[in-house]
Image 1 (spheres, rainbow, N blue to C red):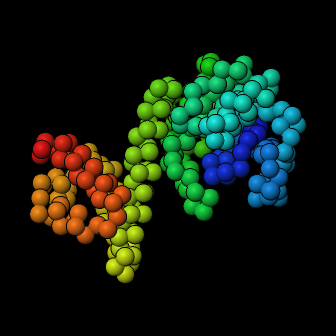
Image 2 (cartoon, rainbow, N blue to C red; image 1 turned 90 degrees about the vertical axis):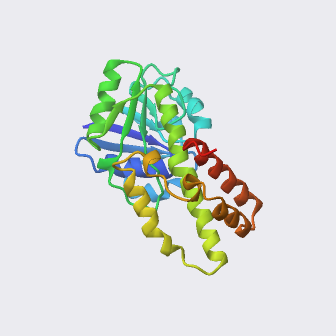
Image 3 (cartoon, helix red, strand yellow; image 1 turned 60 degrees about the horizontal axis):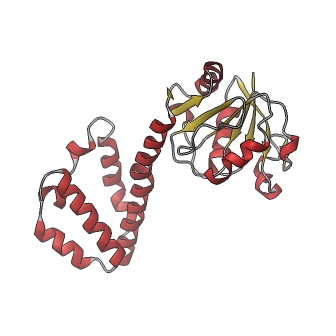
Length: 251
């Protein structure tokens, strides 16, 4: 049984706690956060601490904190015998601990959303083969999808993920706003969103691009720009349209 201490209490920490606790070969033995109020959701499930010097001995210390504090947190616990790993897509491999690693789940996490953890790809990196092997064993207890990924590759994946997830979701939010301006329920668009998402599961996104930009339908594009009241939305529409035109050699 692998013993694990989680440092953090946000979205990633919450889901990693749930995923690891459901594993037959892992046990979360402690959760740390510097604010006691942030730990309340864990209080009936696992020992808690706000004192980083009071962390229990463990096989893995999983830092699920924002990038800005990962290095400083690792520095405070660098003498621990277990592997000190973080879950960041952009942070490099830690240099201060003797045993360091990366345990990056490539997924979007919200506290209110349930996930099938077995489908999540885990991107792994470590400073030794022994440490990598342990991280692989822990990841395998959650998901069959695990990859040995270098820091450079992981940072590239994280950049791509921002486009396909964060930026795409923002476009959903803009679409919702446009609908609400004319009293149209956003739900009407959900079948379209699902079909668009389903297509890229088996086909190249470039090959299934549709819409007025890929057709170079200038009249429709001009009408759309006239409809938009927000300068920001106009700028985004123009930028996306130009990018699609260039991608498909329509300029």
